[in-house]
Image (cartoon, rainbow, N blue to C red; front, side, top):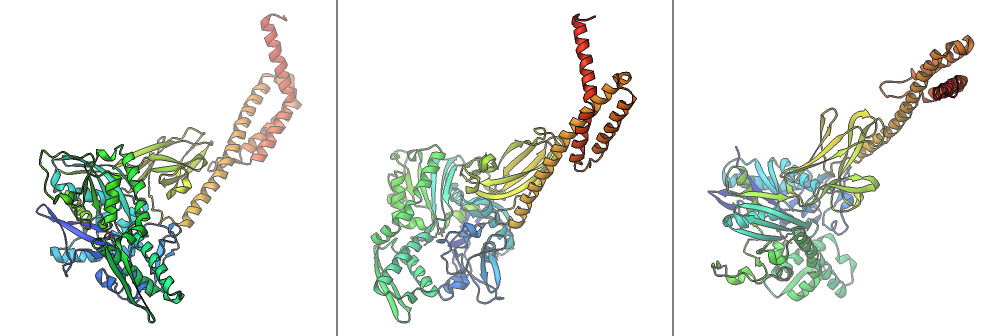
Length: 637
Ligand code: AMP
């Protein structure tokens, strides 16, 4: 069996790691580099793409043919993408099924296709380094990825030739890397993970090798890229103030500005002032600006502040106060920025930085200050990949004393009356988890119902992610009688499986929950149309069945009356009744057993005629009943 590798498929960089003799390490490529930029470049339509550093080098020269930060688009629909997200140097469009596509050289690449190219390179690098074929992987995703984004990531892995053994959450992976040498300890930690494109905050409890995630929160569209973007906008304003010529702003200059902004941002993590220099931004125009750390902080501070509500919500969900935490671990390249460290430290009331104590282990007599420690000791780039490798090793049978209990980040439910979301599995439930709901019918002889599966935290169904719709078929029965159980199961990958069971027949159906991007709009429309069509059929059936029940009762009562009063009715009247009875029977015979309905108008007309014709009979029977009652009471003899 092939070794299982751990992969951090990042917005900016991707890494592959493994465990050897109990030691996790990141695998380097042939040039000794451990970080592979998540960048893919196509030089020509049928050429093999350049991936990683090779692609990154041409990014500024050929911005429209170089795809980066594609993780922002994976598993998402074109309609969901904001204008800010679309500000990339390559084209982004909506495909025929509504999914995000990247049109290039007359082809349409999906975000999975692009990610698969990055994964293929990591696979090759691992194979070269390990000297064996590598076909199995654990891949990490932001904790706050929804079902569609997880499924799409899994598909990207499969496209690259991997069997994806597990999808795990990035902050959980980072916690595994952090806690591997602390298996005897008991502590509560928060992992603050701010990468290139996503932000997650997870709170975990570590207890003798059990890593239990208590809560997770985040934003899959917030990261270092956003800081770059506001800095780029600031630099454009500076440029406009010295040269108002609009032709300066073109794809090439934008790509150069973005590159310069990121370099400046990274440098200002260690320096307090730098020169942003862009010679010959256009043939006639060069630009330079002296940028201070304070200036960068005032430009980007607001974006960093957007991570705070997620921290507060995760703490509230875990029912903890920041003071209950032992450590706040910083992960993701963007947490190297001093302002990020300072703000996180303030929000969590951190007493001091771990690094300020020079990495010296604290003795038994050390009393933890009131707040948690801010732990910057993890390599923010590598922690996630190392954690993925540790999970891979656990799946291979290694690290037997480690147990990982993760949670689902978003609630799952179904649409209910009035377009509301009815939660079946609440967010932060430990996975794997199963939960179900029992349904019955509101109408007689209904044979199916449409179930709309949703993921998210909003009250209204339409504000949540639609994971798909399916039609549930069951045996026809009067309303309220069918009992159909729908069970949601979230597996260890955080991926949803749906099972439906008709409890009367025991018939089961595993519903293939396609991800949101996979749901073909036409298929959904057809499904909805079918359910509408069914609703009309069901209505016709109900009206026929009601008329039939009434006709049956009328037939039985008339026959009984005729039999008991034959001598009083006379032959002519008896024949007249018999003729109309035959009309009702003929109308009943129009029923089609397959649809449980017949000629309703014919039946209603025949029953009305029978009502009319049997009026004298009814009067006679009524008189007789009255006479019998009075006799019983002794009023007459
Ligand atoms: P990741 O997705 O974890 O690889 O993080 C990538 C993000 O971290 C990018 O936005 C980088 O610009 C940013 N980053 C990396 N190193 C630094 C640094 N030293 N200072 C500030 N940001 C950094």
